[in-house]
Amino acid sequence: MKRDMNHHQQVQALELEALTLGYPTASGLQVVLSDFSLSLAQGEIACLLGPSGCGKTTALRAIAGFHPLQSGRICLMQDEVGRAGYQLAPEHRNIGMVFQDYALFPHLSVADNIGFGLYRRSKHEREQRVAQMLELVGMKELAHSAPHQLSGGQQQRVALARALALQPSLLLMDEPFSNLDVTLRERLAIEVRDLLKQTGTTAVIVTHDQQEAFAVADRIAVLAEGRLQQWGTPMQLYHRPENRFVARFIGEGMMLRGQVGDTGQVHTELGVFKPDALPDGVGKDGEVDLLVRPDDIQHDDASPLQARVLAKAFRGATFLYTLALPTGQQLLSLVPSHHDHAIGEAIGIRLELDHQICFATD
Image: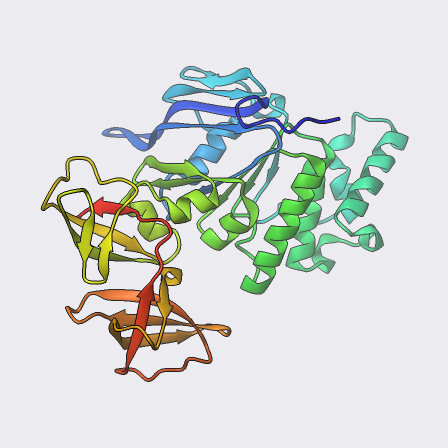
């Protein structure tokens, strides 16, 4: 029987230790990512998430063996595959890759695309593995179709099946959903997660879309300005962001200005709070910003606290209201959409903060 092991006892499928990555230019090295470390247990799915130009794809290319390291080291299944001055060739790393454009061979059928990397196996073995993969991605009926006859979502499944057919110890995917329309994206992200979990595949996926990252990842690395900002579960990033960048980048939220009292409590326009921790170097009378998420602000007609509706966005089941407090500070609130208030109207609000996270003011 398989025991449920915690993160540290599991085999670490991927370890990145203090990587520095960059590109040589005429004036010297242009560093893209520095001091980047993380470790991923076997069977876990990680996302590298961040704005464009933050080094996500460079990191993925380094893991694959296509980009040299300036410093640090990479281990796969506990074997060192890269350090400054040494790089194991990509084809010896047992890594599967799914590219943004899927890179299917146009002249080969779906089945032959999936079996492409299995040329060293016997015919029988190859046919068996291809049949297994077709079954896994639900494309048995399309085995003899050509790639151009398939939809974007189907092409992506074929690319995934081709990569998984080789049973890689690590699968890398670069913006795998970016060519698909939004409704298909989220559905496919959940489908891909299920397939990876079913096959016990360890994976690293690059994306700039946080909904996608939330749908697919066990752990997310938020990258910005050449550095790892935070490495954690989706819940940790949303409810316990470690810095202002992560707080603003992940989910929606506003900062509520407050002042620190004698015993570490924070006095704000919406009441007094006791944050989990105060920022370093901020003491009594210091100013802090308290992170308030739209789901922390409840609409309550009976509440004496009033806020004015500045703007609203209809989202089907809910409205996202932008509200102004008497001092002019703004907050966001998610309200069931049968509460349809006019712009300029004052509504009662109640704050329900489970996680009280604050940052030093800018």
